[in-house]
Length: 451
Image (cartoon, rainbow, N blue to C red):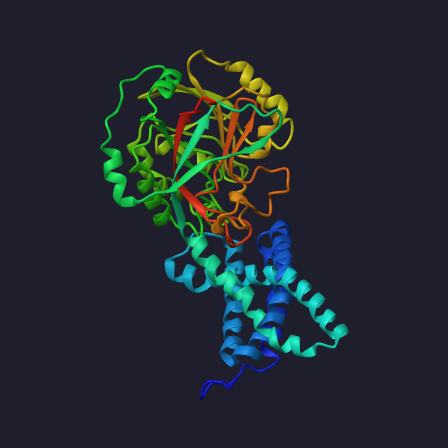
């Protein structure tokens, strides 16, 4: 392919040298200023992403010309600046996020994705050599465009939430082991929100009777989980998303942990500003803690208190709703002794007759430690829906589908139900690939009687 007029390819030494300098300097700088934990993280990022990204850069420059080479020079530089900035992490202005953080994280994700891609590619290229089909290699070289195409699509998936109405049936089947159950989802049309808010409310009654006798009026819950205030979820965006969710006029707003990132932790007061719309729903907002919340516990506790959110740390509360009182239990995040701690929580707050019993449980893995039939519905997050999968294409499969973690959707164990939210935000791996986040209104209804 002929290069554009006036544009020369970057010198052959430039990109490898830039990657080497960043790969060596970043962990050393992180170790000196922040400590060995972040230095180790930075080193792992470099090792998992830079080599494969360099190889892809070489292939794409051959295919697309010098512009691809300069694009990789910029992306490697952005990755270095972004991860260096995390040594003294704080929330950044939009120009920094869009010009440096997002391209830098996309480069890291691209390099990680290219590791399995090049492994499979090498296998097939070797097979072509054995078969004497060298022409196939040339014909298929355009497949090297596949990883950057996936990353480009994933940028859109990572920036947008899927608005849904999720109908959860309580009761019905009682599986003996944890089992994925069917779930009704429908895309939400924002233009219909005003009509939804105008529906007549029913008089308060017992929750069980209301759910059984008023199928047209389900209990409406907004779940906010894993907002992870940071580059992909800046303050203004999280605030706007919460305002949109409150537009459903939910009966309950339940927050299931992991509010911050390194950048959010480094910006005192930002979380309280982002969650400020929750102050307009007094008495309806309840939260539990996630694993990352223990890294900045005071910041999370003060933000929730400022916004009028009741934080349940191995504790319980009674919520008044138009369908009657609801018992809400909130489990703290524990890495050890989960079964004993949950048993103690249930013993301190036994079931109350005629009242719906909800459990806020950040990590859905811990649902396996909940005794069968102990709660009507547990609400979890933590997995970000699996984060990499085929959900965008209409399939339930994610990279966690074969793991012990319930990744997303509805699960049953006995009469108890577990709903795993795909996340209001995400953290860790720098992109969502095929698994969109969700901005859902949950509608709780009784299961239809068997015919």
